[in-house]
Length: 145
Image: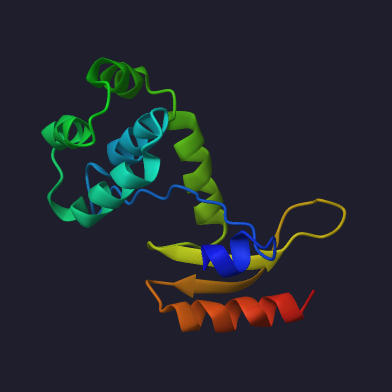
């Protein structure tokens, strides 16, 4: 998808956090941990490991995963303790709630008007889907431009 749509400029991919603390008590902290790993160029690696283990995460897992990713642990821990990503994550949560998001993963497909104002959402895809499902949905949205 990245090669066919993002790199060609047909689609812009924007990631937003939507930690579901009512289902996963460590979800908010996990979102912070992913961003802190991102400061060392390892956001997606941390994100994917956290997402894969979301049902069983404990506070000690963040440090263990940071070690596995060979992060600078003092930088990672200082970032995590600072809470510097908390406001951003809360904004993403509020935006998701406003848009009616109830679970993850959720993908919003839309267009940005030439005025540059906010995205007009045309399709919502809930759950993991195949490339062909995304391709069909993206092509439908692109046809509406």
